[in-house]
Image 1 (cartoon, rainbow, N blue to C red):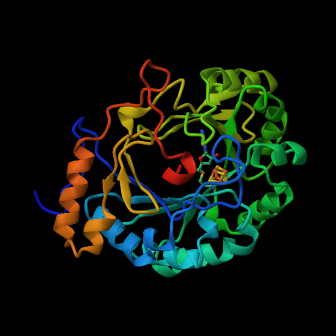
Image 2 (cartoon, rainbow, N blue to C red):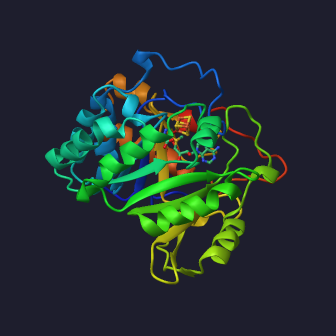
Image 3 (cartoon, rainbow, N blue to C red):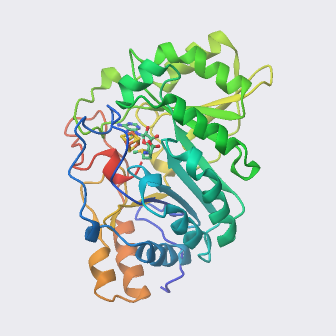
Length: 338
Ligand code: SAM
Ligand code: SF4
């Protein structure tokens, strides 16, 4: 086994996708993610430096982990974040760089982020912008921030850059809330450059208030949308999380990410690195592998690669949401990096 052999888990899945949480902090307090008062943040010294993140990404990229998504918390609140984007874009083996953001700071940062990626040698950055409501009051209620206008300005700023297209908007689907958002999101998907995707609510909320009754499934949303404007399925890539449809009249597309009602674990090619340097092999992992301690103790690349390989070998076969005995992890989505 060499440092550059592919990274494979004990169930035969090859890992090619890494989600890096660059901070646990956030400027929103979405009800399905964080408590109103926030969470106890990591100390600065606990958070990986840009150099440390880049080192781990280099080791992983050497093992075939070509796709890197930066998330958080809110990645754009991390000071000097574009510098990290430039550093990661320059890592040999990183082919695809993506950012998941709530969009609040995009008006300020869109240009700097795209420029940073280009400087590092990656011409195109993919963005997922999370927007759960297109109505100001309801957006405020759900995110606990009166920020819809700011986020929409951020989306417009991003749309100015052809290198950022196609731009995806992700909306968490909550029963009793999201049904009323459907017509506006359909109009947006049909009449703008943005591709809208609904994601099922998962038990990763800080308030531990998740119940299966609150999950508005992708199938239910599909039926609601199809009744407004008929949909036709598009071919899905094996490891893609979203089921994407186009409107039958050719005007726009819309997607559904259904981790609860239609788990895609058997095709999962993802692992996650938390802001404090823990490797997580599943969103719902109950165990983590500390990479920060060996990294700071001077481990060389082959030692880090071995630790990663051993952790990945034990990657969970599947999540057990909805099954008896399911245990919600201690970390919330904001502290894992969604
Ligand atoms: N702050 C950024 C954002 O909101 O896009 C990045 C981090 S956030 C944790 C990443 C994604 O996870 C967002 O699209 C958010 O809506 C989603 N998310 C958070 N909590 C969730 C939950 N309990 N179930 C499903 N998705 C969730
Ligand atoms: Fe912050 Fe994103 Fe969680 Fe909302 S979903 S609280 S924006 S980390």
